[in-house]
Length: 129
Image 1 (cartoon, helix red, strand yellow):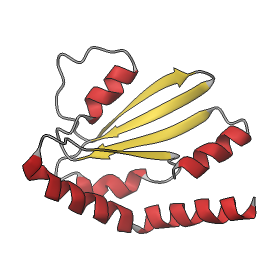
Image 2: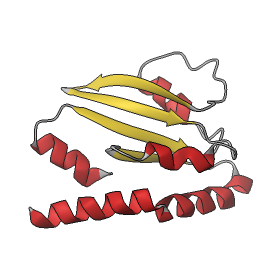
Image 3: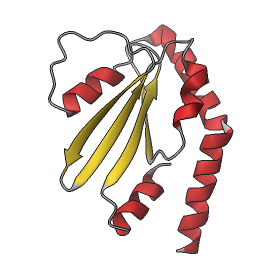
Image 4: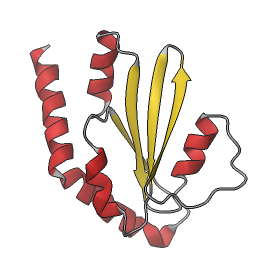
C-alpha cells in the first residue's frame, strides 16, 4: 500500500488504483472525495460504513473508498486494507481536542498486521528492482 505500489502499477501500465480515505469522524473525508469528483458539498451526512467514488485522472481510474470514522466503525478499518494502493489519512487540524485521538488511531492503524505486511511487501518488491 502506498507510493511504491502506485509506482509499480504505473510501470506495469495498470490503469486502475484503489485509494482508501480514513480518519476520525467529521474530519472532511467525504468532502474531499466529493470535491475531487466535482460534486455538490453543501449537504453532507456522516458516512456509515463506506462509500466508493470512481474518478478518472488523466489515463487512470481511481476507486476512492471513503470509510466512516465513527469510534464504532474504526475497528473495521482493517477490513479495507487488502488490495489498497494508497492510504490517505485525513486530519481536521482545527479540532484540537481530537488531535490526541487522531494520533492514537493513526498509531493503531500503522500497527495493524495488514498494513505492516503491505508495507513489507512494497519494500521487498522495491529491493528486488
